[in-house]
Amino acid sequence: MSHERYLLLDNLRSLQNVGALFRTADGAGFSKIYLTGITPTPPRKEISKTALWAELSVPWEWYENPIEILTLLRENSVQIIGLEQSPRSIPYTELILNSKASCLILWNEISGVSQSLLQFSDTIIEIPMLGIKQSLNVGTAGGICMYHLLELAPK
Image (cartoon, rainbow, N blue to C red):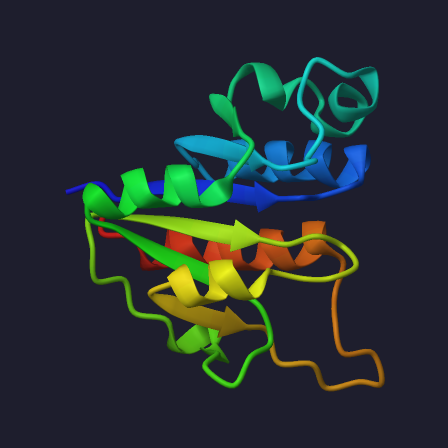
């Protein structure tokens, strides 16, 4: 049984981060990317430059309101996973997939995942930070967690 994986990018600002996440989603076998709010959408040369044209191979859709697509995903038994430091978060290595599909929510580079999306999440995961800095670039953090979801997925 295969495990469908989706990525939701909420209010990202950087074209380069969007491109990097398209490229990583392609490499990790994600089914679709949902771009929401102010997240830039293809076609844009700045996205293509970083994505190396992965935006042409990974299907994507844009929604103004992320709750709209998350509601549809939940109705289809998709496990919603927020990536954010929160009192509810667990280390990403302790994540258990309990559905036929999952959707990883990534954040705005300044403000993180919104409280409304964290409340909508079935699980919130975080990457332990051992240094002075308490966060990673969204593209780096997304890549770590996308490949972890690939490792957890039933073959």
